[in-house]
Amino acid sequence: MTAFDSPRAIDRGARWFAQGMSEHLLGIARRNGAPPESLAILERAVDALVAAARAGETCARFEDLAEVSTEASRRALLATGLVSDEPTAGTLPLVLDAGGRLYFARYFDYERRLAAALTTLARCAPRSAAEQRESLDRLFERNAAALDPGEPDWQKLAAALALRSRLTIVSGGPGTGKTTTLAALLACLLERDPSTRIVLAAPTGKAAARMLSALGQAAAALPETVRSLLPRESYTVHRLLGARAQSAGFRHDAAHPLALDALALDEASMIDLALATRLVEALPADARLILLGDKDQLASVEAGSVFGALCANPGLSPRCRQALEDATGIPAAAIAPSAGSSLAPLADTTIWLVRNYRFGAGSAIGRLAAALRSGDPAALEVLAENAGELRLHAPPAGPLSGALIEELLGGYADFIARLRGRQTDPAAMLEAFERYRVLAAVRRGSRGVETVGEALEQRLRRALGREAPRANPWFHGRPVLIERNDYALGLYNGDVGIATEDGRGGFEVWFAEASGGMRTVPATRLPTHETALAMTVHRAQGSEFDRVALILPEADNPVLTRELLYTAVTRARSEVSIYSAPERFAQALSRAVRRSGGLGARLEDAAQPPGTRESQA
Image 1 (cartoon, helix red, strand yellow):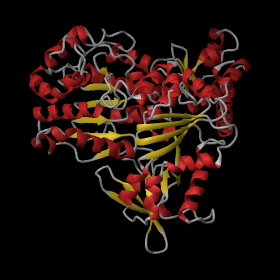
Image 2 (tube, rainbow, N blue to C red):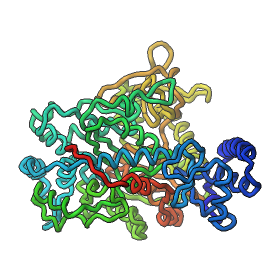
Image 3 (cartoon, rainbow, N blue to C red):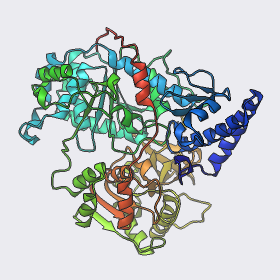
Image 4 (tube, rainbow, N blue to C red):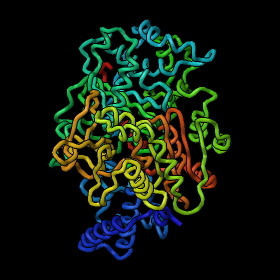
């Protein structure tokens, strides 16, 4: 069975799209005089590409759909006149590259353009960070007490690397100090040049707000002269690029670049290929880009696993390691292995943060997260301990019981108490709501977001004495999750707000702003939304809660992967409850996400010829 015959393949809506696309391209191929064997392989190719896109992949493996020899099938596909096998692609709708990857042309073009832009950044002649040795020593002095003898300070190294390069990629899980590293780096940039224009961004409004808040906390120890120069606002990527309400385009692009000197993008693992391409292309020619994320999290919902591909090789060249020793005092021999060749064009740009400052060695959540990252079966042993911060519940077969729904709702006790007290401060209500979240691996089914969320809402209404007909979903304190971007309103997929009565018989919904304030939108103007008592793990990316409850489905499902488990567990700061049969958890632990993509190959292509630019970082 090939990847394209698997259960993850095409659902009904995608099949309609594939059928329409197939009919369109087959019609053109027939007019081009393509033989029957070419038409057959073309139809399979379109089905495969639609299935790949729905799985978040940018391409399909051609060998998986070749019914005869791969070379014969390749010739047959090229004979349709609709497939390019040239490295630069062109105007044809499909591309088959030298590595046997089959693309819709737009995905190939995005990979090619992103690789070219990133390679240009990485090629810039490095600037010495040694001149700021004193600043780096001062800013990371407190880390020394937490490090083992001889252990390098990866935060300090990441900051030094970013001072040296125009492109820096920092990967680390929650608690590894990405924001601390960023605060120190920005302080160094501002000490070097106080006029540096720094911009903060993240893929979602929630992530952008959390980034700004966390940076403010991390910068508390900095001198006031530096703190006063730090950004006071953060942006979603769409808002930063200037998304147009009535268009798929953006105000900023290569011809109309962003007005900034340094861009720090948090939660970079959430950004898809198309958006990453447009963002990097909109950077000014001399800008600095810092990508912060967690390579072990779920990748973007849309096609592409950009961050995972970019930070796959953390190797540093001997020359770079010596430069980092000069800047930090950390011996070169203790700094990362030599750069490999898999992502050579981006060598000397990536550092993994491995020391966790939030979860100590005895933390059950920390130990579970570490085991999940590598698929270590010891994760089951950690769960079986049922330590204070971890709980594994194995619900009986069938729909979740009323008692279990009550137990899940109990996590919102502080929030419910505020609603019963007729709390009117939306900021306080939202803060209480955001301490806990029920997460589900799937959307549909008896243990999916739709069913569990509806059951939670019914019991919440009953507890508040505000039961109402289904036609009227609104009540004071209703938590709302936005499901579609509305650029005109400045609302984005994943934003969470709280409804209050507007005094005129209607409702308004309050949303937190990245600046720390609140703003309101009439309930009648909201884009597609739902009650937010339960959400998928994917939607929870970019968020953190004190406590998390994770529900896995009864039956096995392709979405159950170690990346999903890791992402869910690391949303919690202090407590995780998992509702799953042990064997279902074990299946998820044994399955890793493997997305097909060719960004690494495009980076190698972009590195030829190996000319360099002489600009300074």
